[in-house]
Image (cartoon, rainbow over all chains, first blue to last red; front, side):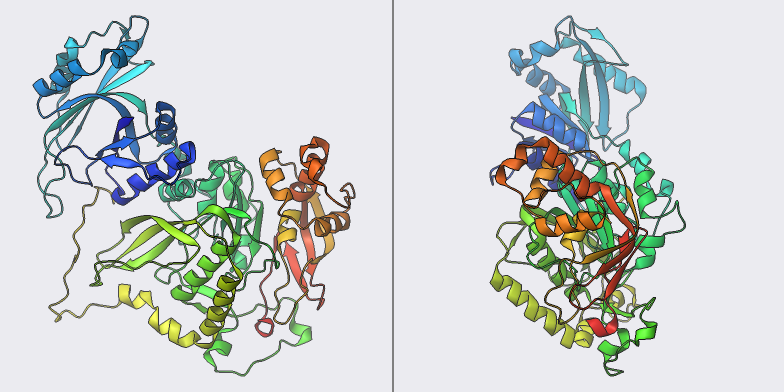
Length: 471
Length: 122
């Protein structure tokens, strides 16, 4: 059945993929993508979408679990004028309306608008014009059984130099469910005891956990766990969590006994991670034969813009400054191995290889990938792997020069000997050409180096995109 | 560190071929209660290396696990609870994981194993 799905006007690219991932979680689709429609002449980035979901229960579950759905509604009518709306509501099948209009029921009508502000008189006036609907139930503003929404959208002029995304249209429908945004103030980073410089924002962490379909009984792994901000969201949805990081200070010590990764879980009454360990994503310590154990891998890899990745092997050694050396036996205890820079290309290669091996079939890999925005190429190239199918790409613009893209990949083929062998050869290649990869993959300079002002070809915001107010 | 983690880890020092299972040296161990989730536990039963788990549990002072597992045991709640206890509730808080081939000790400190290798081991 078709439902009206109204989104919050933020993180525009993340909204449909979230619904798709959750619909799949609650209804387990067999390979058929979710069907979507837009109101006539509406732009993709408007908050108003129509989605075809198998049942009202699925729609309710999706809405309650989501972060970006303002509401999913059974649409009773729409029109470009009030007369058209009235006509549409009157022709909507009586048997669909009647159960919600009967005298034993309680109800309330809310008014919402997009692109235009209304005074409370105007709102009341509009609600009163709905008196042609034969409501027999009692009005209850505090605890109604049925909530109806009258929503008016209007063209509000240009946005970021782009044409308007909506035009005048009025919708009326019955609410099925909406997002529980109360989660966000509870989990917001400023209330978190232990924070690192790149802790994941709570809203984004929940979106990532939704993409990964985290739920009770599943095991979720983050190879760059840091302060655990992504796993906190996965644990909130009941998943078992596991994290690794190369920096022992982060995972072990934190800032004292009640300010570490464990305390971040304790703070919210969440179950502790199954395990935290100090390990290098470049040389993971998994036993031979261990595979298909994680249901999802969620991470924000260090891509060298705000924090650079590290791998073991020795800084000077890999640069070729010193000869291979041995740590003397008397200095082994407490020896802190030096680490070398870990280029983005190598990091992503290792991540995909790890995921291909360690994810169960249909398991999900959810991670951020950086994108330089003044790149001329229209079609962005994202990492590929024979075991994976890319199902969602959501961009979040961070500055005029770069953005990060949340990629969701599903494991569709088993990890074979051939793929493992290829990955091993590639791993050695990275080790030999360590320096070359560092130069090629340096995103930091692309983002932070001053732009040559005399260069006319540089345009400040090269690809204009619609952006919500707060994104 | 729980025994589930122990069951997944191996010594990955360059040249080591028999890095699993790591031997456990206990300095301090604790038990913490974890909610029993039968789906998760059953799922893990096929993934773990049973012999290594039995030995690890014994090293931690828990000898209730049977030497071998059979298919029918998935339905035996008493068994599943023992498995759950061994896998998730016993923690190695302080101690070492020892590489069976080279004897290299990986420290476990505050429950977190440090599996990072020195420069000459990679």
